[in-house]
Length: 321
Image 1 (cartoon, one colour):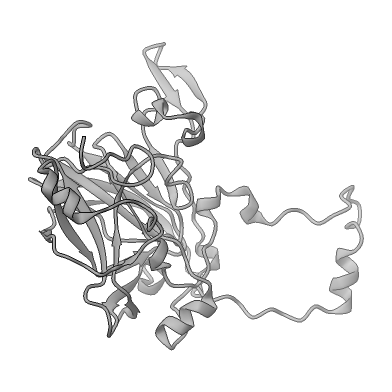
Image 2 (cartoon, helix red, strand yellow):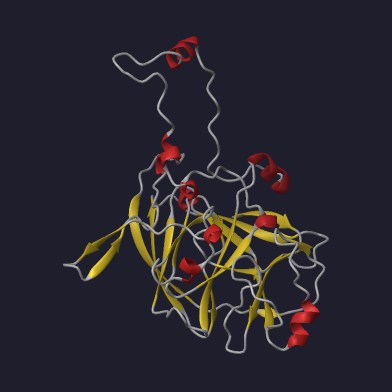
């Protein structure tokens, strides 16, 4: 049975999915020559990946567009994993009507999100998405590639909802018990031999210091996140276009893929797995606390055509245009 944690009432506005905004959670895969991200101001733009000419000059090949990690060597079972490719056919989610709320502010609490203004303007329609469960894949990245969704589709879109990881000590306060795997290994007391061995170069070597830990070579989003539970007050919600794929970093807390609109979206999903359930996927159920009227809620503002409007971060729009 999944771990559960109490949560306060929190409302989260939508953001535009860009490589910079999403960097701590994973990578965004998009065509750097045509994506809206390439037109953002420099602080919000990332350098495009290296590229070469391919296919007898008829194609541009972008190199290393995402970061795939297999960290199953850290798993308690030590069972090796293999690369797997699955397909998820995701049906549109049901949203509920907007209603007044006394929710505490999220990390975007300084934004002007006056509900009366939104409703009276007639420009946007606000609906609510309840986030009741988060999951993570502690030892693998996971890449979602949408199929058959146009970049400018206004009637069907998908949302990417992610959260940072709390320290293990804070996680225990939230649940009253230790969080699930991966749990840190107990530190082994160093012997005097170990101490002196690290103080001098290895025999027949020219290095004067030990090599850097292996995880420093990984992209920050792909490094192990630790055993903590999700940090709900810093949860983020992004709206993606049909020409964007997304990679969740290993151990990144995220909601199951959420489709909104008129029709399902097919996703090809690439990851590693070793078929040990608790090591492949871990879930946390979010239950509103005793004083909470609602739990974690994402505010989905859309225009007359049903296209989600960005209300926070880069590319945000105002309710009254």
